[in-house]
Image (tube, rainbow, N blue to C red):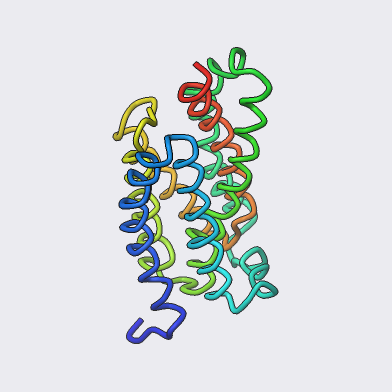
Length: 220
């Protein structure tokens, strides 16, 4: 890709700008607003001032945003099934690593909060990190797959910097695990040109993970 258009440049620059901004904002917000209000505010900024607006702009408006769910791939149905299974690997891992032990003692309130948080986060993150990058850069391996997968992992450094929030497994688990998940989901989206299954997998994984996070940080 020798030259980029304006939307491609905006999308490329949005990833590092997002990561740097959130790395500064998350510790500031949680230190000054408290871990609960600061953490939720940080995510709202991430969702509604970065992920959604950039996706809408780069797709050409709200009406064309739905096109990210209608992209076509020429791979076989069998290969699609394989890539969809790859996308579900984080669901299985997070279920056994977190959800299986926490869910029986977490309570209904925690489960509902985790589900709502997971649905919003999983949908908007896949729209941005996988959907719009695939739509704008199509078959370009670096810009459609590797670049957003890398910065998806880097953005989680900002989450680890939040004051008062404890993550099971520490920074290595949070950032390394997110990078690994991003590579799996990115591969599935890149090969199948669909973010529907990847979005579902992300929501399920977030539901399992946020159940543990919410319970350990707010209900123990």
